[in-house]
Image (tube, helix red, strand yellow):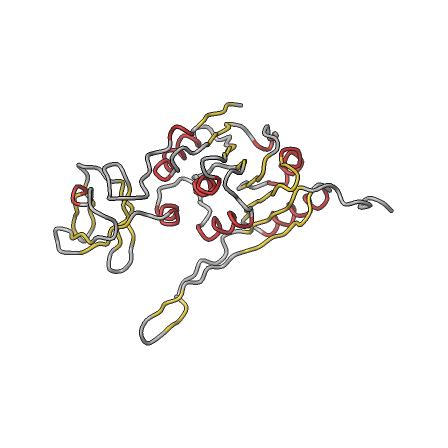
Length: 280
């Protein structure tokens, strides 16, 4: 098992002020198509609607409009975390923003929390966890795929909070959790039931176990494992649907497309076994 501290890799604060060389910009065209740019002084944005040199954006303020050489206009903004998750390049499927927001609430990820994450993946959830725990908290991510952590770090670094306390353990979380008195445990793994016993040892009293799973069969097996363990109570599962609406002067209707099923969120609280639960 190896552990790498990532706290020193966070970039300077890029959430305020004008666009800067090395920062991010989100261009939005008249059809609301979005283009994520990593700004470079010598860079250029090329599209079927013409090209736009990055240096014309650098130093300007978010919310301004820019014109390509062929006359098409783009609105430039700094990307939100949701924008970045949806637009960033990735090798694995990300947890969608609608689920990330629910995970932060259902998992009660609070400032100063000690969080262990099983499955670093593309880092979408990791970025949200780091924001939520703040500089006083910490996130430790288990990742056992060789080279995956380094690739994911490259993706999340642009939006890592300054001074974030982030560690990566290149280890298999199925083999056990080294940390103790953990406030929250989040899992994005195919077999989270294999972590239940070690989760009970790692979590502080009242701590929250949270798992994100795509299928009902996985949720069913995990729920039975949590209920049968005896050290968890309030086992609950939810699914979220996101339906945007189109609003104009003369009409208001649901959009033709919606973000429907992406996964199930299962939570449980670390508790003492219920008195008399095993009595006849």
